[in-house]
Length: 428
Image (cartoon, rainbow, N blue to C red):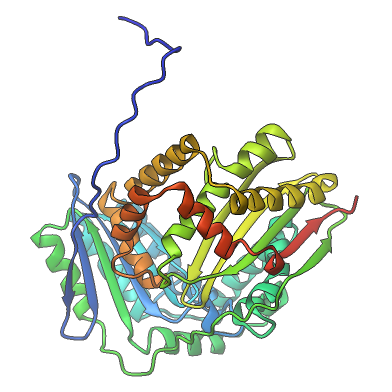
């Protein structure tokens, strides 16, 4: 067999059209919206169920987290151990699906086992025992995890920057501590359950090889849930950035420091959002990006550094994050700002643009790779408010991208005067 010639680069496929798996939407008699993505060659179904109400809608924020864990710890008919036994015996996987404004579960299951597993899921959602012992167990586990997180420099730095980026009074600025979790009562959990599940604001997404039998099983399952009977608990509060600033948190026992730099930006509804996302991707969104080439490859200041444009119903912001030795913190900040200013001052070269376009296109292609990734797109559309045309907009912007667009986005939105910075780690 002939060996490949390693001295010659392999051919790269040209960008072609991309299409999401088609979806159909059913509105059931009880008002539940069911989105179906019927695609795939294996008899597997993934069902995701969401109720209105998430971490930003409650105080303490951990209430929906504790609730979701406690719900699968026992029902009126099944113990927590029995629930796990049934799920495992049927080869299924059930996980909690939290977000800022939604709570729910995602189930993976073989189609011929749907009936057995969906009956258990119905009991988990509609008949949880939520007894004090289950709540205490879940609280203890979550509080322990939180104590571990509070020793991580990246976790602490992200918390520290929140007041500058979101505003002092914004829900995302207020972070629970372990004692907040431990103080939650079973009564609070039951009240949270009534506001989330009891309100009845449900939507579902089914993806996989959804044949007629599987669709019938899912529709029958969802039809047994009550109609919405109370106002949605969702409350959207726009970000109120406090302007530039810096917060340094000393963590003497940490090995490295975390650096987080953020700039307030546009939300997903803005016409510049996709092009700005591509500019931020070119800055630090993939291995060949500006920040990785300079700060990692050339200067060796950090193992990894990344940037992303984050958008939600509340607003948007550019985030850059890295971990490094404490003595390199100032240089990482300086070099990051230098690379951003270069993008403002000079159009990028054609070869860099080509790499960026190819990466962005291949990254977008993964969204259309399977029924599950396509379902993730439709779910994200609901959870963070992407417009219906977002996928097509991305493909169009990738194809039309040129150096001047990247420079224009940098000039409009890479505002160093608005940058807020947080660091966490040992002093140097």
